[in-house]
Image 1 (cartoon, rainbow, N blue to C red):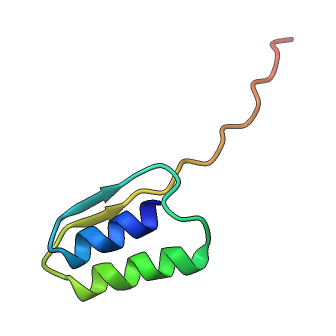
Image 2: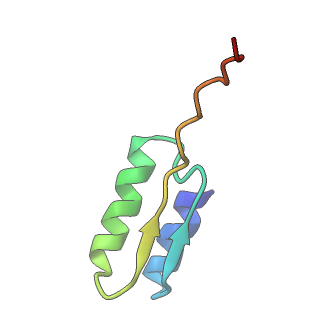
Length: 60
């Protein structure tokens, strides 16, 4: 739902901050990018989820 809400907000003239899982696939991500480029006067910060941290290693 992030992509749909982000695109709708940008098209409505709203600034957007989207975190966590921003898109389900590349198509949604590209659509979000296109919406932000159509609205260059708006702040559109799309923050992808961080990569999972490597498993903790036990101390020797």
